[in-house]
Image (cartoon, rainbow over all chains, first blue to last red; front, side, top):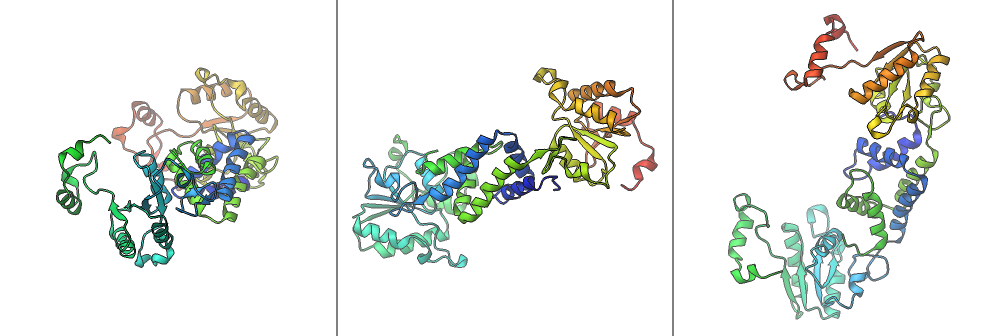
Length: 206
Length: 206
């Protein structure tokens, strides 16, 4: 793309580095910003800079945080002895938006994946085990994606803490709401039959 | 969306103001930037700020420019007495990317549209007429979108300059390459029959 302004071209190239943003979309976004008042553009560019400089990671659960410890870990109304183990910050946001969970989190930062060169030492697993030991955690809920890597990670952590009096659970797997039996894969369908629920617990209000 | 960091939330909200970017996409982009090195994020945010502060509009053709006059208007190899009239900067970029045009441009900034409250005074029409008079323009090529507003604008400008010895043309309308006759609307198909081309000019190399 040939642009008659190198400043515009710079900005377009920078936008096009973002994931899922091609050159045409980048141009559309930059021309939009060009039409905005200069103050608005400053607010936009400052918000990015401040975000990168200011956002910290909670030293307890590794979730994003404005301070040393995140608002979830500091909250007195949340069950501090229930930990939901997730892969990424995005999973925390997804679970929070259900408003169904009242415990704390632990963000691993990924899952064990030898093929990608990711071992237990690359993840926040040690700090999780330390938490479970020190905080007398009552329940560890694994909310990892259902695949080999996720299951390996669960297995690894479980072996490390099986001597502790901590209940270990995982989120239910089964047919998704709105999904169709016909198109479910065999493993999902097989497991959802094996782990069938009594109808009372299915009908229970959330 | 409930985020545990107000700085992150700010940045997400700012991104979500961009056209076609929703909250989820905004979050994805911001988390991507959060993972980048701080220097890269500064380059990104500076490129936006500098673009907004530095990009000027060419005082001759109203195209974007780094200086007072844009690189196309300054180029000695381009035919300065041929003007292609377009609606927006994006149209300039689209035509430039064909590499088929060797004249200059005039960006109107829109088209006459009484329903939207846009009259000739809101557009760069006066400066176009002034250019045609002063620069002894040889040809004015209209490359406006084919709709009522575009045609009205052509008609208006044409009436204003019909006393000048300037050829007035418009880009060809017809069946698009890759398009199918069957699905063309009646006006396009009808006009493309009425304005049929001698086969020699069709087969002529570009």
